[in-house]
Figure (cartoon, rainbow, N blue to C red):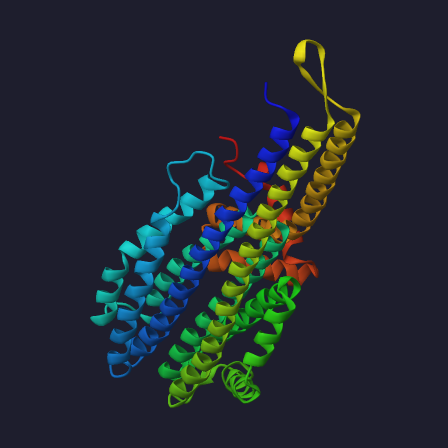
Length: 408
């Protein structure tokens, strides 16, 4: 019969296995960050290429495609390391579904690039295609954050996901603004879309600041060039601060260069986030292994010193060992409870995003909206009602059961 101490040690071994799995997840997230950054650059170059009818950034776009292919290979290699044979993978159903969607999108990249090269797409169509692929990659990061069982690592993943999502909105703004300036005009809908991208960035970076390590925040602050940020704000005001109308097409290159400098600086912060995540995993694994060794040694010592000979040569636990075992169990229970409480607090942020995503899906299904239209509708309702976005999303979900077609 398996003893109590054996189960106590097994619990610690399970914790180590989960931490090791999180470390592998961290490597995947880092590879995805590199690919997303490369795709963001390709998207921006493609937008200017299309907006200028192929007269600008043709060579740079091809060079960026080559860089994207290298980054894609690294992500595919990380996907290959995922244990798809195990039915016990935490969050496996959602994570593997997200990966399948991403692989399908990556398989279609060659065709997308051919259509861009032959100018068969508008800037909007190309942007939508790249945004969809990048959104799929970020969804994998989100599922990775949602699967974390260690509070400190979970916080690091939440910070990284929100920073990457904010950077993606910045990338969309770069592509959108470059296209608008290159076209030489912007309408009211375009101005609204531009402002929406700015507000979305601000929301993501606020969550990042709430969860990021102090050192990461210092690196982020140091990465911000005041001159670049001031010029970005000036060009934003030119495009969105007044009435819709004509824009100076010559500003397209300046806008693209400024946003590229800012986004490249963000990439350096992503590198620090990935490094912090890796070190955190390494520290937690080393700590857990050390605690396992200490726990095993303590139990061995207690057992050897507290066993009294029983009838017919059998051994029985002495009271000292029983008291020590109880102390170990209580310590383990308190530690797990504290971890659980902290993890619940971290996951509240992830659950808010899930509610928004589900509400978006509901609006898309019942009002035939695009994903972007559904998100804008939720934001507009939130502003009109002076409520948080998540509160509006939960209210929409509460109406799900009375919507036509539900439960049929």
